[in-house]
Image (cartoon, rainbow, N blue to C red; front, side):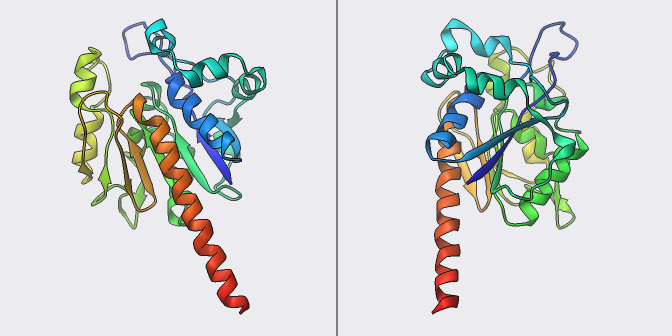
Length: 239
């Protein structure tokens, strides 16, 4: 398995003067889930190099086993500090793409032409697309058959009430829940901060940071199923 993880390069939280970036747990938990499953992982971002970590994601109350593992893993830290530039990549050679959240993606990846192109390449070629928490926002301008990619699909993402709870409703460019509905997605959600992941075909979305690990597990299950199906087809053609 070869998985591309696309991470935000944006580090400013609107006009607040505060820092933002990607949510560390939403990178670390899926990353180690993929690595432990034997996947080869490529990290990329719009600017390349070290993507910004949202400082709030590293607060004492937000620590997790995956984050502790990352902090004791200099090899992965070096890999994260040297992400590839999105514009140099295509979907060729990868099995899936995974977008961790944090507020950063709402400012850069939503409008990034290379990100939009990549998602369309993956989806159009039958490969899974995964986005967690605020990252489903990156689907805003992605199309499939001249319609919004999420139109008619079951999706989830950071809820309006979760945004209200972190007091950023009036700071973000738009609300993820509202936008997914506006684009024609069949929006679903669980209780605030609950682990909730939705799978509809080859699109996988997670509601919040707690959902990042389950979204990664659902992707691994989907890739395993696709691999088994392809093996079956190859076996049938030989026999």
